[in-house]
Length: 66
Image 1 (cartoon, rainbow, N blue to C red):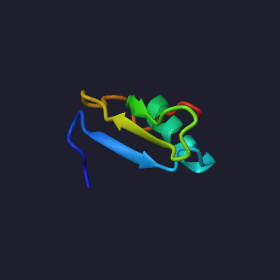
Image 2: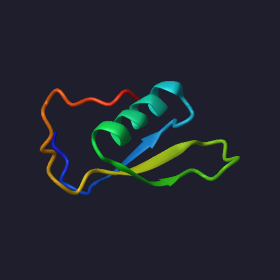
Image 3: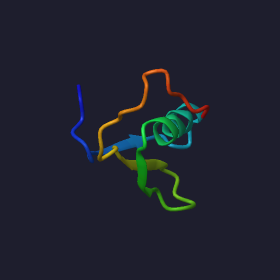
């Protein structure tokens, strides 16, 4: 499935290490942006991300450690 440019992706369980690592990958390698996160102290952790709004023209070997 391919998301349209500028889509919003909602991820639950943002307090789990695997989810945080996935978000770090999206932010560092796919040019996604954090739109909103759950309030501090909330027992339910989530994050809303906005996908990139432009085409990715980088070489397919491009990678930033996350």
